Amino acid sequence: MRIYTFKRWFTTIALLSYLILRIYTEPTWWSEVVIYNLIVLGAIFSILSSPIPENLKGKVSMSLALGSWTIGSVLSGIDSFFGIELSNISEVPYALFYPLAIFGAISSLSKQGKSARLEVIDTLVIAFSGTTLLATFFLKSAQNEFLGTQLQIFLTIIYPIANLILLMTVLVFIGLQRLHKRNLLFLFGITIFVVSDFYYLYLSQWGTYIYGTWSDAGWLLGFVVIAHSYWFVSEEEERERSHSPYLVTLALLLSLLVVAISVLLPNYFPRFVLIPAFATIALAFLRMVVAMSDTRKIGDERALARTDELTGLANRRRFMAEFAEFSQRSGSLLILDLDGFKPVNDRLGHEAGDQLLTQVAHRFQRVIPRGALLARLGGDEFGALIPGNEGFEIAVALRASLAYPFRIHGESIKLDVSIGEVFQGGGGESQTMLRLADEAMYRAKREVS
Figure 1 (cartoon, helix red, strand yellow):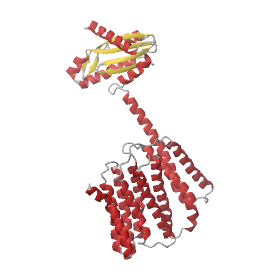
Figure 2 (cartoon, one colour; figure 1 turned 90 degrees about the vertical axis):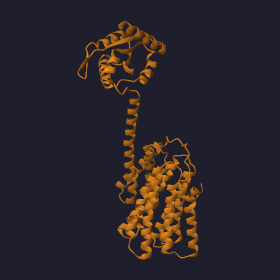
Figure 3 (cartoon, rainbow, N blue to C red; figure 1 turned 60 degrees about the horizontal axis):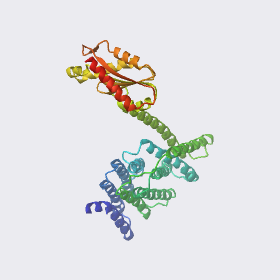
Figure 4 (cartoon, rainbow, N blue to C red; figure 1 turned 180 degrees about the vertical axis):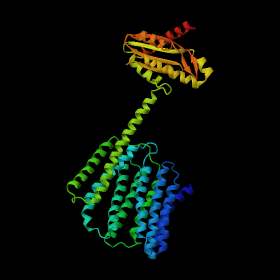
């Protein structure tokens, strides 16, 4: 317990110590490059040391995000204190932080094994659309005041958008779940980081940012709070998410509207607004593909659950489900049991027996009329539901289909079938029909033997 307490609170104590140190000393490379970034590494250590077993992928992804940010911070510190030009290189790990953090946030906040792909895509669609709107209204007015080289202007634009996407993703994902301590702490940490980053971008744009000032502590505080969130168990209960598709549709329409206005009025919106707008549209199409894939997969799983793997016929589950309704109509129930199958199966093996059952099923299927149901009930037993008055004729045809021998492993095999047939005029008891058909089948088998 003491070890876990230390791992959890070590980073918080280190942050407080750093802040106290800043009160009494001037910023140095030792405090701003070494100690400062060791606190971020401590946050990574705290996240990975959390005893909560869920969402390991989220822990690793968020740790990689913080690690990438740390590399950028170290390079920036070396640039500031030692005059080595590394500012352009440091932008790479800083930029890499955002996709890793977004993926880490989704993986961390989602329920392991419960969060479907559609829910994640829905979250991103709504988040990108929200970013489009926020960028349109809050960043549009600043577009003419961006200063510097093309790279600096690009970075000035891309970082606010990346921050908005990160914050909106966490907000939407948490909004679709039940609020609890872990989610709220995670949201609080991300919010602190985003606000600190916006403040830094504001100061940098106006040339008033000074490396190693108190504003830099905001990033550390955000990371420490995020690390604390991983020490809380996420509660199992979630809110119903049925409203999510409607939000996705609205998000897509809003992004399409922004794109349409940009086409008709090219200079009305800044070009950077189109980045999240196009991302929203692309994710919406991805959602459609995933939804179709999931629907097809569900259909295949349902079909497999009601189909006999060996013969491709309906299985006993489907037969009994349809028989309950069939017993209320006029028709015949047939129970079929192969004669002579067991000796063949014992002598030639199960593989040969499976081939024989497959060929038998194929012959039976050619006799069964359209609208009837043929099923393998298990082993060498089959069942058929024949609507109307053709039950006896179909039973005769089924038996006749086995009149000529089968060829298995080069050997000629002769089989017969005992059939019990019960005709029901409608409204009968299904269990009674089954019992009567079984009795008729066993009488037929005794007569053959």
